Structure formats: C-alpha cells, structure tokens
Amino acid sequence: MSLVTSNHLNRRNFLKTTAATAIAASWPMGGAVAAPKRGGHLRIGLGHGQTTDTHNPGTYENDFVVGLSYAIHGRLVEVAPDGSFIPEVAQSWEATPDAAIWRFKLRKGLSFHSGKPVTAEDVMASINFHRGEKSASAAGPLVAEIQNITIEGDDILVFALSSGNADFPFTLTDYHLTILPAKDDSIDWKSADGCGSYILKDIKFGVSALLERNPNHWRDDVAWFDTIEMLALVDQNARTSALIAGDIDVADRLDLKTVNLLARNQNIDINEIAGTQHFAFSMSTNKAPFDDNHVRMALKHAINREELVEKILFGFGSVGNDIPVGPNQKFYNTDLEQRTYDPDKARWHLKQAGMDGLSVSLSVADAAFNGAVDAGSLFQNSAKAAGIDLKAVREPNDGYWSNVWMHKPFSAVYWDGRPVMDKMFASAYTCGAPWNDTFWCHERFEQLLVAARAELDEAKRQEMYFEIQEIVHNQSGAIIPMFANYVFGTSKKIGKPDIIGSNLDLDGSRWAERWWFV
Image (cartoon, rainbow, N blue to C red; front, side, top):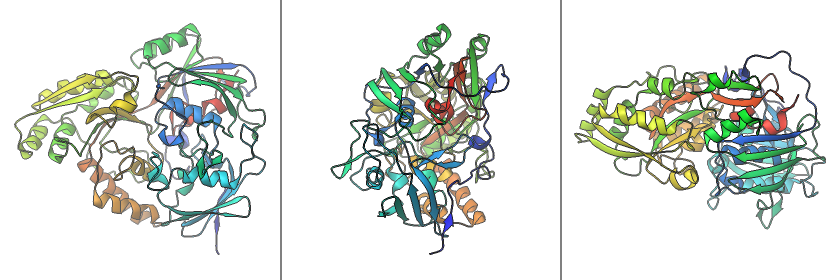
C-alpha cells in the first residue's frame, strides 16, 4: 500500500497568522530570552474553575481543567507554539494518499504516574471512550469519522476513517483526547493517572490544585517548575490584586479597562496574543422565539459590534461577523459582507416574523467572558432602537457552565476557537454535537462539512467552506460580535519562549510545560 509519511505536519503554510506567526507582545519588550532552568514553585490564578468540574476528559469545558489536563496527561499529537503538529505520545504517523487510513507509531518506554506502562490498548481505549452512541463526550463529533481502530504489533494504531481527512492529526491534539489507563472496557479517569510531565498531588475542584514535576517523564525540554499551585480565582479583581501583590505569578483574562495602568507596574509583564478566541451570544434554535430565523437575524442586526470592541475589548480584538472563524484563517469567506448595527433591518426581520416587538432575556456572567455583564447591558441598550426589549440577567459565576450555558435559551459564551476550520464547526455547529450550544441543525451544512473534510482539491474545498460560512452567517443561532486577543499578566520572574502558542489561551494552555523562572 502506498503511504504518505508525515511525522511533523507543518501548519505554517496552512495558517497565515493565528498560531503560526503569533509572537508574544509584552509591555515593555524585554531583551533576549534567558535559557530555561529548573526549579521553583509557580502560582497561577485562573478566571475559571468550578465545583462541578471532574477528571472526566469528555466534560472538560473551562481553562482550569484544560490547563490541568495538559500538565498531567499526554495526547498522541501536540500543537507546537508555531502551529505545527508534533509527535507526543505518538512517535510518528503516516497516511494513505487519500488520507482515509492513518497509522500512528507509539513512543516506547512511556509510563503512567502509577508506574504502569502506556500500551497501545490504553491509547485505543482512550480514544474509544469518546466514540459511539453511548458516549456523552464533547469530543464525540471530532472522532465520529473514525470507523475502526486496530492495533498492529504492540506499538502501531491504525485509524480507518469514513472518508479522507488531511487534518486528522489535528483531531488528536484536542484537549479531551487524553491518554489514560484502560479499565473494564473503558478508561480509568477518576484516578487522574496520567503520563504527562506533572503529577497531580492534590485537588479541590473550583478551588485549587497542586502539581509536582514528573521525574520519569520522557522529555527533558519541558516542565521547568518543581511544583505548581493552580488557583481558581474567578473574581477578576481578586485575581488582579493577587498578581499585583505578588501572591501569584500568573493571572489570565485581565481587566482590559485597567491593562494600561497595570503595565506601569515594574514587576509585571502584560502579554497580548492574537488568536481564534471569540465571544458570542448563543440562541437555542429549538426554543421559541429563537426557532424563527427572522428573530435570530433581528438580534444579529440589533447589536453594535464596534461599540463592544471599543468598550469591552478596549481595542484588544476585532469585530466579528457571526462566524466562528477569523479573516486570518485559511478558507475564510472574503465575500461575506460585514454585518453592522442596523435597527431598521432588525425591525424588518421582526415584521417578517409577524412581530411588532420582541422581549427576551439574555443570561450573562463574567465567567462567560470578561466584560460579559457589561456587554449584555450594551446589547440591551442597542436593541431598544430596534423595538427589542432585551433584559440582561446576571447569573452566578460558579456553576455557570453547568447550570446556565446550554440550559438557558440565550446566554453569553466564549470560544477559544480552532485553527482548523473543520474542527470548530464540528465541535459546536453539527447537529447533535454535545457542544452545539444553539441546538442548530442544517442539512446542507452537514453535507458540505463532510464533503469539505474529504476534499483534497484546494479550490473545491474553498468553495465548500465559503458556502458553509455563508450558511452559518445567515442561519445559525450564534451571534459572534467580536474576536478577542488573549491578554494575560505574568511576573517578570517568569520566562517564556519567543513564540507563544495562540491556539488556546496561555501559550496553547501549555504554560505548565513551556514557562520557567528566570
């Protein structure tokens, strides 16, 4: 069988900016980066983490558990800071010319923190945990294309896909797809027995976690801290105050209103990274009045996007166009007209829905994204001119993701986005996907997404993705008014590489492995 071999699929020609060229902007800019060295106790304050979190990889939904997972677990493939795919638990991979069958050779000599060797059976069970009708994993749509997994010898996994997918290695970088010990026809996720570069020593979900460097990890170029203390500091003021006081070394999701003031602190670096993160307001299309697309379109025209970028992002981002991909991504639809604030159009759509006015409630909390409460108020004000009585309802931060998001019919949400367009749409827009927070289904969209994934002709693929974006732009239940840069603060004692990953916040959520004390 003819094979196309690839143990390092470079994405730099795939992405124009985003992860491939995102370089950390630090104020003020420092000199040459000091060489990493081992030692020290890192304290990081994160604007996420809730008491309902668990170790179940299928339920990861916030940056606390994602960052924890990247520290203590391994995956087959890793997204490098420059956006390329590099081997992790896998040593290499190869595909047939039609990209429908993939062989992954596993790295030898790996072990879990318990001392148990990592086997092909463990890896297969870890991926299968997210597959099938009985799985409730949020990664289910990502692995739905896998028809079968077999083991050759003792170190090769063969993935047979339903159709060709040139981006398949990226699927296996997803933070849900952790490698865990096989147990009773499933996996042992409750013990948090990982094969990552840090060992979990203690955790109180929604409060804190304590990690210790894994002395037996296979890599010697990661994991520079001796120990790490993760703190769930959802309150932004508490998180910022802790950074200023020196009680923590890292704080994510800074208050953009005060970033310039914070930058004057001689002990703090402000870091800004442009990526695929976007803020949204999601409407449940399976519930009235959002089951009427004219109502959805009215709300999309009733929001002042420029005002949100100015007053919520303070310029640290850009205007969105109701699609979950940005203009720097490959296959971005350059033909789509930018949607603008237009109360008259909003009123027209309401009239088409048979309405003279509209009254709806929007659930917001700063747990959704920094400034979500204020953004709800601005949306409420702009909607009035369109005859829409929008009530911004402030919800509790704790439990927002488990009790409000996807439970209330209209809610604020943030998405880290995905560098590969197919994965963003598959995760949150396909019919029945666990993270389809608008409960939207569209037959033509589904057909195109499957076809585009398997299409190897670039021109034909672009044509399909253009239509996909047009459908989402005009039909889906997602209002996406803005793309937000990642802005986080670090003590000047923290060393970071020249290139910071932008596929997720905080260096692709790999801060635990990639940063060090200078």
